[in-house]
Image 1 (cartoon, rainbow, N blue to C red):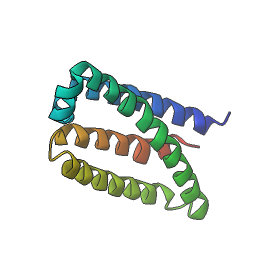
Image 2 (image 1 turned 120 degrees about the vertical axis):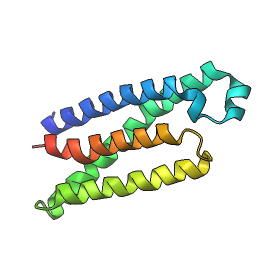
Image 3 (image 1 turned 180 degrees about the horizontal axis):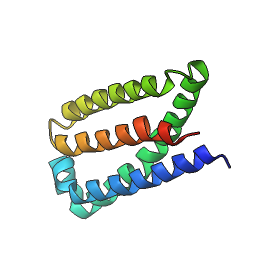
Length: 130
């Protein structure tokens, strides 16, 4: 297997664990009150662990890998900068969408998660690739 894939898998595992811990601890602040009252806090925490700890890293990790690889083949000189700017733009859009959808509930937690993913996948991943 390629060294870059090992780097990507390591980053995805690290962010999955970090995201799962953050969303487990802060589930009462991030989740809608209707979900908490209907399902209970324990079920909401389990759902957050599955969604933010497994699904999101498995979704954004490979997508970012292929987008970076594509931008690297098109313009190798500016690929890291372009990819970082793209990651920042996506993080801003997702943060605004989270604020609108969740009506500012858990804004700080979503902002922290988006910053972590932007730093990890937008800045760290391209630097660790060979």
